[in-house]
Image (cartoon, rainbow, N blue to C red; front, side):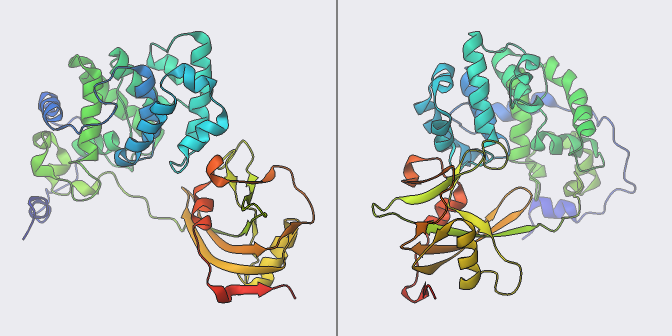
Length: 377
């Protein structure tokens, strides 16, 4: 049975692809009515507390709503206001962020909270918000429009998709100039309706739900009469998709080393850069070649880390995706291990007491097969 969307897509497309521009008068009032009747309940919705909205919008960057719900509740329970967050230790903030990813968000949020606490007030405009560490145009516009009724449009991926479909605009929407054009196009509409926060959230909600990247539910959309992409019969054509690039793979050995008390040897990453400040298993690059994950290669990698062991036991592999590469960990347990070269930023600890990288958490959950023990030769 065809869905309404499938039926619409199989209809003959309109003759020529039109140049982008203003669509027919957009019924924004219908969108606001739809939003107020259908918006999803979220822990931060209905609040005008700048701290709560700021935390939620920071967490929502590149992260889905359903993932954020639990993190948001736990974060505010631990750090109920900006002064509590400002007074916290960085490791405590990272621990509570553990598993949410993009940890630079947490570091910037913490640094910015200290600035706000020192000043004794929250920013009052989008421009002031944007001056804080880690607060870009999206977050600044979202907080200022929701908390202070500033008529500044939010332009995230969902808003970009809605705007480009309404206008049948070419391009993939990730270009900063295109985002600026979308913001300029939306600004009069945001200013006209007296509730900038609701307007911005309505467009984002539409993109998150009905105007999805694939199989959009066009026949339920309150803006379909003004949508050029719908009129053309192929809304999924917008935004255009760039050809997928081959994702590079970084292969590493990771070693589980425990002391007599059962604590795990962990290494802390540098404060800046990928996973800044998080703790992880000792790791070394895997040898290239056919047997790069084998026992002999594992022993060489272990020695390069200033460690040696009576025996090694394979625990399996962990594959973990980052935004621009995939990480492949060959995980080995080093039995009766000792340090031959002590290293800085490395210590035995209980992983539950530290902010630990997700790949390390997954590696520690692996269970070995008894026959995988490889003694030292």
